[in-house]
Length: 139
Image 1 (cartoon, rainbow, N blue to C red):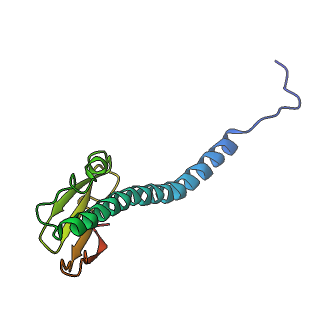
Image 2 (cartoon, rainbow, N blue to C red):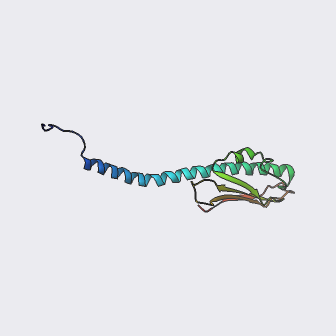
Image 3 (cartoon, rainbow, N blue to C red):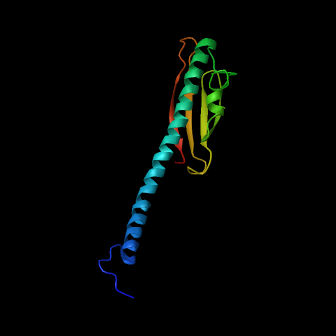
């Protein structure tokens, strides 16, 4: 058997070093990527909730109350029903306010993580639908 002259290629040791470097870079990059994915899914919830809140305000201006209202009456039922990442609940509906809670669905976020919009302070006489704010919990 004759010796190979001018051999080219990588040694086993060089390939192992490349695999270690790749694993280290992946270990750094994957958590950042997952954070961006989580932020994108949270943005979906905020968009759906903004649509529902806008519909709720219009409902209030027409009816001067939030009582007996639903996502369907706010023209937001389709958005709520077709969300893959959250379940939405409308609660604490009264004449002057309401609460929307979006709860994560799946294993992409911490268990029980929620985004809440609480609307209050509506005044029918002034045709003021009130104000509210988002609050995140469990993230």
